[in-house]
Length: 338
Image (cartoon, rainbow, N blue to C red; front, side, top):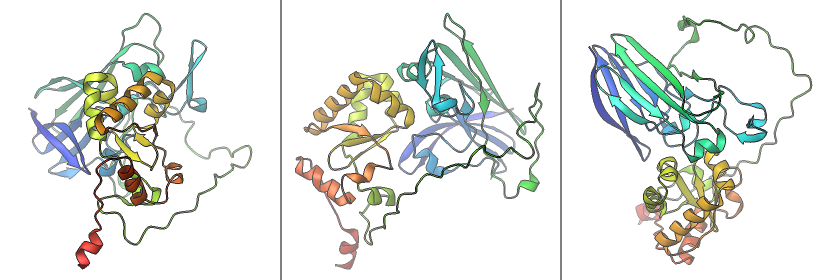
């Protein structure tokens, strides 16, 4: 019989609680806060799933483990669904793998997680639902069962799926046995050519790395000319009381300062939501002022344009300093040479 243990995944500055079922040599780990997905399946310590650690640092779609797809599998036309004559923007594969799930029960027999609507889900998917994800482990067999309940008073259009990432060294060593009621053969064999040439997007020139990167900052922040906003964690904690729904979505987010604005890295769904919700914009700006003592505009973090305002991360830190915020800039290379 399986045995349940609790743990913590901690890497790249983020921390998630984990639940693990172990039965003999086998272990199945689930991370409720990370889209409710399975993040590890091992035999005698050997990992069968592919887990890209850096994905846990990002608020965008996880490309690792076994993401849960709902309410759509794939990408709708033009990135929107149309319900009742209105257009609703939604990401490829839906929203379930982007949100933290709640633990319903966690026992030796099974782990059950739930996901229900909130303001953000209604923005992209205007329906009432209740998802229940049940994980069990019996010997070497891990079972994943997803239940969808319609809790509203109108029809619930949806599709569901799983998107497993397996850790393999050679595809020839992999085989699948999928017991499905129906199976489409349309994706196999030679695909028809595109009706017209596909225009490749222009690739922006790559900025050269500075020879002496800013201490403690990733190469990305140095190249894009931004610096982490030092008060963001306090802002998010304030949200927990002021707006629990926003807090749930932003609790693992990051924010940067580009010399003018605080840029919030909360993923594409959050970017769409915040652009359309003035009340949430005003609340975040108010909390930034309350915590930092300075009124600063906000904007969505978009890597392709984040570096247009300033030339490097040190300038961003200097701009923070000019706003009256306490900033410490340390040159680790110079410190080492002295």
